[in-house]
Structure formats: structure tokens, C-alpha cells
Image 1 (tube, rainbow, N blue to C red):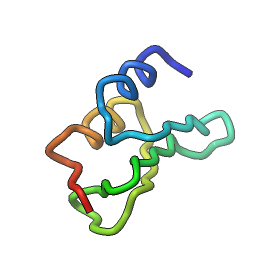
Image 2: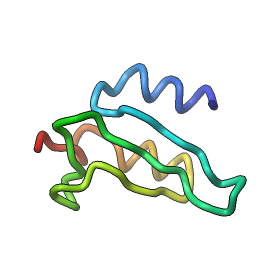
Image 3: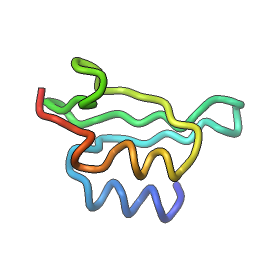
Length: 67
């Protein structure tokens, strides 16, 4: 796991797991901890991102809500 992902997981308690599947031509899959969801997709706790920058921005505190 990259240093960036390790830092994000350590500093954002709402993140449960980050799985980088880009080597499989997929995306970076982010799984939120139980009880959290993405603010722009209520009820959704798993989302794919194309870049590390998108993961960083998309998992910022203002983009996550308690479900």
C-alpha cells in the first residue's frame, strides 16, 4: 500500500479500506467504515476513484456523512 493511502487510513477514521486495483485496469476502491456513507451517494459506502488525488478529495470529511 502506498504511503499516501496509509496516511489517509490513519488520519480518516471513516475509512475502512483502500484497495488499489489499477494494475488490473480497474479503479481505486474505497470502503468506508460501518455507519458512514458518501454525501453525494446516500446509502453507499463503497466507491471507485481513478486517481490518488480523487481519493484524497472524495474522502475528505465534508464528503462523508454518518448513515
